[in-house]
Image (cartoon, rainbow, N blue to C red):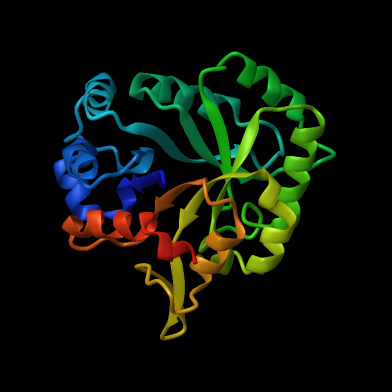
Length: 252
């Protein structure tokens, strides 16, 4: 059984902000998802308290990931401990088991992964993930490899979210990213990125037509938790996409 996560940014942004992320919890649960990814950038006045959201997600037995658009390493290459502390506090209130951030400005010679290790020791119940984002530095294969190598050397408990589509935005080679980073990957964000009128656009997944998202998925372990991070419209199609992930032929 595939474990499929539905991030709240897969749905229409205006509707999510108007109705609140909590209003989608039941739909996601009924669609057969393993869990959902709450997005900090989509919090609105329509959302109930974080504790209330946690209770509803627990009621539906949904695994919770908390994604925050912060950079782990600041422009001065130091740990972004202030923002990290805030999102870990919020993540705990949400009952999140995983927290996902971007790499930011990591420099092997200037950034102290030992300080990150000390921070994470204070929060052993939450797993930190670092994702390749769409920036030229946070989505850079060499920078990410350098960070995960340094973290591994010092036994820092951090894992990678591999976003199959973001490499196009950060102008990196997807196959090279897989070759260099696959051993650190424990969470896969699936999206298909195409060119339309000269612009990169994230589009819904289609299987068995040679798209890069399928090549990425089939290059990584089959048991990875997978997130559907592409436009799901209308939202009622969520179940259809989850079933597409769980059908055996999708992994042929």
